[in-house]
Image (cartoon, rainbow, N blue to C red; front, side, top):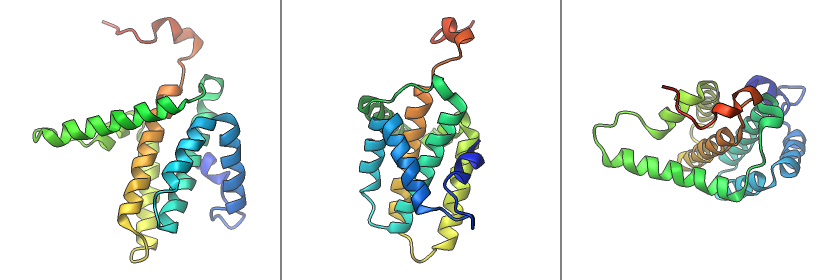
Length: 174
């Protein structure tokens, strides 16, 4: 699904099309206005154009993949959902940093739950870092990676269970 979502942004030559990215971002603004506003704010922070372009294309690809996979089960995200996901990631990072025995990073935990997305993002980050080695700000790429982790958390929590599992949602099975 991620490759399909990524192809929605590609030009005939296979590179990211600015017009397609703009169209898909406008679609996100219509369907998920709070998420789109939050992403716009996060994308405004880095000064590096390559990092910003990478972040924008990956953010829209991830949103499209969730949209195509979850369909009607993807509820509308609020600003509070984005803030809560950001706080959850921040708290998890602080707890992990404070405990020397913890060997997993927060992004590793997210990757356990969303392995395909994690592999996809890491591959794109690696490709970009190799292509722009001397011309990209690593701190800005880091900021984009963090934005994507928060987006994945917010979207993951926004997916409602299928109707047949709704009675069990939130319950622990013993």
